Length: 474
Image 1: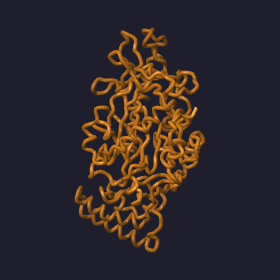
Image 2: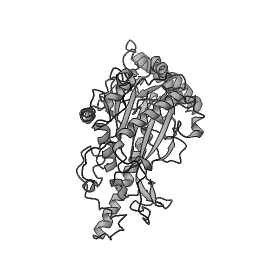
Image 3: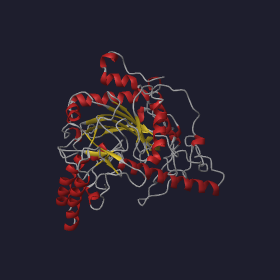
Image 4: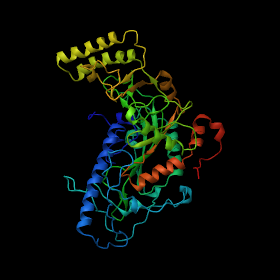
């Protein structure tokens, strides 16, 4: 997994852009989760340092008016979302008081002014090996800002140097990307964030994953700081993102070792086709309850599911996952050539190679007469590595874990080649312990005010909204 390219990441989940210096969007899903966890760990360390400093010096020296005193982090509160973040401190007691929703059209979208002489933001994180703060906090993280602070457009369908090389770039897809981003900007005002739009069309090369053509707009939410007299992005990893993509399924784990560009694509996901979490019995009730709470807020009957850091609203014609669960026989049929290709690319010992091919035959014999049974994997990955000593890979794990193995059928590929999206996903931050005010505002705005009904009609019943501009829900 460490060697995944940035392009492959578009199929994994909601985008996570590590740096504007990167030539294109970084990996989603797995890599995005790593960046998210890294950011949280850095913030946790920073808050611990800040808390220690506060205890050692109860009185914080007064700061210039343009850069008010940084609040001390309160003691950690009990976790509301599991044990992973239960030790993180929270700045929630310092958040601005709730305000009534105001659509972006009724707010100024000019660049946020910075008072003359305001020093650069330098507070609070531990230093990196390069001598730079790993996490920088600014009072701007608690302010409503504007789209006027946005950073340059990037991405495989945004940066000119990549657009001209993208094999799936078309005027129609570019127009849809602009429309998707317009819906986001008409709903959400950057709060505690500075944004960067990544315009994406994937696959942009013939050697990339065999997935239906994906295109969309990803607004990456960076921590804002003062730099050289203006609002700029922090060196910290992004604080989240809001995106709309056509023909994508976020939150999947592709079967890299058996997938072939231009030929086949298999992936593992923790949800059934009705987007109910079923993979891990011990987590089923909690995951589905969290998704249902968001579903009750979006204003329409549409599937909602969760990735590690995001909420995903799926808009399809039938409210079902636009993929087909593979059979055990199909899984074995792609595994055998995958093992042979893997041996050419990255040879194993002759003994291990022979053992993996032998395991395929053992499993065919074990499931003879049941090869048309839907394939469930005992863990969240399907890999040729599993064929060394795992005869029970299609059986539930020791805690009852069973992940469906999916693929896309030909109609999904053919439909995605047209100028009309086949389905849409709208993604925004989950609510979790330790999240920032900016993440909370992005979550609440997209859950309560994005007009999912209008967007669904714009894709599947355009005559119904013809001549009507998009407006967010009040």
